[in-house]
Length: 145
Image (tube, rainbow, N blue to C red; front, side, top):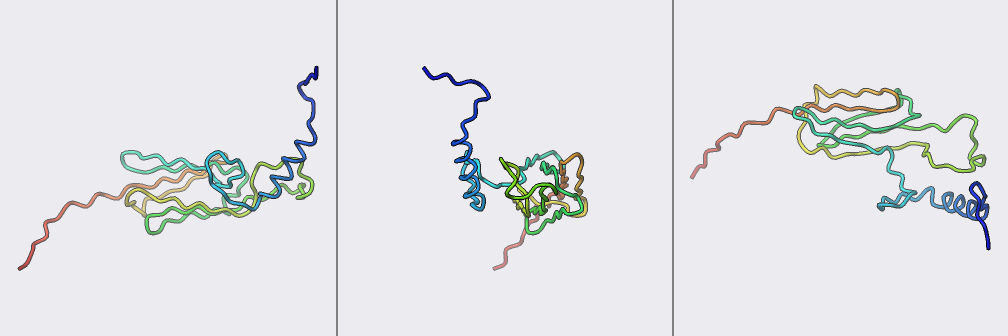
């Protein structure tokens, strides 16, 4: 009877997994449950009474290299995650953290007050506060004959 001990290495499977990861690295599939999906950063968008709050975990990104913009009902976040200085591409034994340029574009549910927008970056978490615009009061439009 074969006995499997914790810590025992299955090198052929690890090599296969590493090669499959390398081959699929450039593929950008966003199928649920597929682990090579590169939807970075993952975001949460909360709706409060007076604002929307978006949070994104982006460790390893220099805040000076972040670009946060809004236009036509979309919030766009752009940046670049730089790989560690000591790491060469061929030195990775396992690589799960994405590095390189990235961009996320998120549709906002309602109008926002662009003057009150605010973005803060603390401990690797980007927090964007988007105040809601005052709702326009309905106006009666006269119908002409």
